[in-house]
Length: 280
Length: 261
Image (tube, rainbow over all chains, first blue to last red; front, side, top):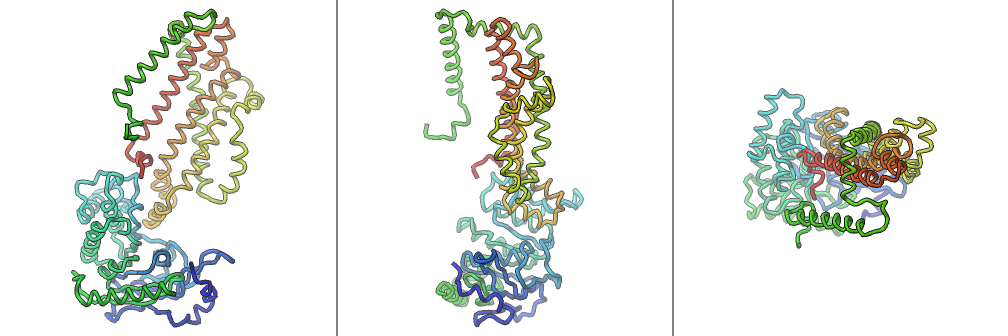
């Protein structure tokens, strides 16, 4: 349930909303800016049905950075991801990638859906090669082979998704996205449907791939541990309408010791922020 | 017994079971006809003799071909028109809202109610029968295609857009494979309807085909052995048509649509 008192804040967005607004401007490590979102607002519905989903969100993501958007379920973080990926147009505000306005989805930045996004009518090979339609046959095949190996699906090239486990389908999904060699990946709770062991393995795999391929990644999750394990920076979002509540830089090198005091302190700081979000 | 999954796949035991059941019913039929007074209703042996007579005279082949010819033209014509139209209507949500009342009014009208109008338009002959089959197939196929499109998960279309597919590629590489399993179910059901309708149409509008055979056999001296022989042929061919369309459901790029997931 959104707070009805918040409905009127839309018009004041440009005038600077309350004290809670934090703009997640690039970290002190001075990376070159890859993505920049300026004062993004999103309102769904009309008249009495209006729901304010995103409330003046500004953020910057550096080249090669791994950023997690963390927030409670239904807070609007997926909406934000859909806006930066070009699937949704914001009600106001704008998103720029490489200094170009985002006007729609693009092959240079691929959205990794949950495992359900894998095409059930194509084999593993067919799915991974889906975006490679304008390549020559031999180039296409060698790319497919490379990414089949990268995600460890050798021997399953001819298998159909229904013959695969959830974790394997998620690998296909990731490989399909990577095969077109995008420079950004958007992941929307990609491991949410997996069991906890597979989820841990997949996080390790994703980090391995990220380090090998140096993509800029925006990863949406509601799992605090997942965010702290993966990200360079965690952007904590409030309940709807989503605002950026806190930005936490995870200054722990990979592989991360998840029982180190620094890790635990960072995690507890985020927990506290989320706890406050629930009390609003 | 505990596993309902076994229902769809007959084991040897259930196969023997159905053979025994059919044999028992045939014997019962034979005995019932033998010990009754009326000489009109034939027994299974007389029907068999009737089938043989039809086969030897060449009428069997001629009538089957005539019926299949009409079904093919009516059904294929309807499929070629209804599927693209249904997919288009389903794709544009507003078009679906506009067409829906019309479709809902036309749908409960039996195709047979169109017989007078089709004879008025096309006279007695093949075209009238084909038109009836076309009508009977058109609406169910349009509805199937409409529903199939609107039930495509957004995630498939978004994935297609994300890989910068052109609209034509979205249709051929995402939309078409996504709707195929449901279309095949629709084609199967509709082909069954078309086969029902052709028999009725042939009883009235033409002078060949399996439907005509049944009416003709009765009118020409109460040949009920040929009436039932015609019914048997209709049943067997209907079954074969269904098995034929069903075999498509086992193609791997289509079979996903029928799994439990």
